[in-house]
Image (cartoon, rainbow, N blue to C red; front, side):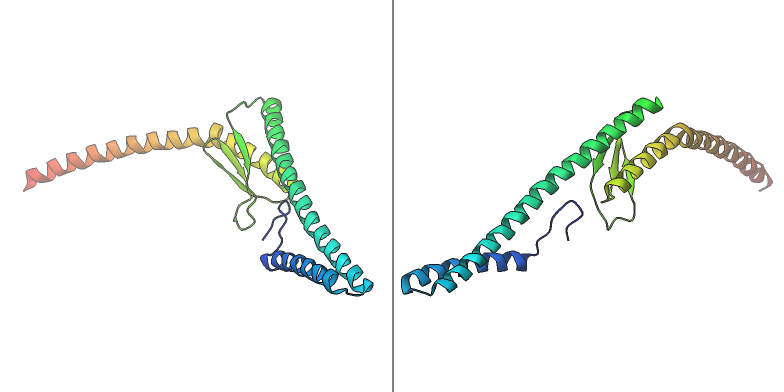
Length: 175
């Protein structure tokens, strides 16, 4: 299925348009050779022009959609640079827009890249801001706390180990 930025023409419809064009062209040639009435030629020409116009419209929509996709990515990259500059939180973050409506998330940070899964431009912009803030909260607040907790855990494990060893040595003496 196509997204808001990717046109989608189902294969049966594409095949029908191609078949219609081929059929109309064949009938027009046959009609010229066998002298169909003028009204039939006009009808065939109308159908052929409509099918060609539909196919051209599809390709133009696809070209504009690809341009729109590049535009969205460029705006997201510019917004990320603005966030970095205005917040004073310069970092090596990059942004990638990969619309995925079936994802259970709007976006996420993997390594140094913010992945945006929203199809809507406005929602993608909001998600970029959210992920930028969340990245810095994790980096500035949560990571140091996790390191502290891990150090405390190691100290507690060492303390438990030394107490356990002392207890075992005491119990061995009783045996």
